[in-house]
Image 1: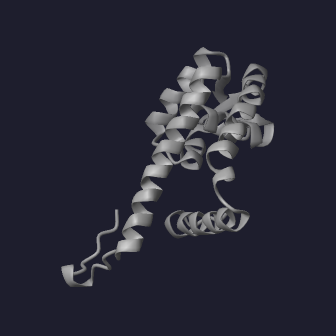
Image 2: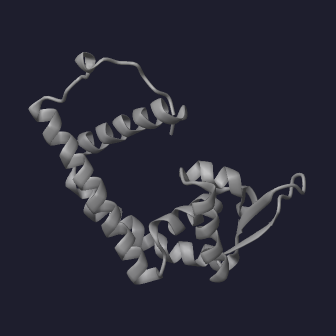
Length: 161
């Protein structure tokens, strides 16, 4: 982690409007993610982190990603991803195997059952995203949200969407 040697005098305190917006953002993200997770668990016995892993695998060549790359892609620790993949593997949705390109390392591979589970869950997830987020904003506000969060990802992770 990078440490900064700033003095307390150069802290850019939030003004009242920024404080309200920040707290609304925090509360909204927490409530939204909790609701989307609850819907996936209720209807498909999948958590949001499990769903996200299935999505990433479905978009990868040969539906396979090295475990280390998968952890980096979803922004979770390797141990957390290993635990999540283990559960998906127990349910037959993912298999682990040697990397196809060089035989070193372990890849997670989306099974046909995993693809079918993802296809079913995607309807619930996308309906939830639309109902709980997209329909709550004008097109302009939603586009602005995308630009702001894209800028955050670029600033913190050096990649763009």
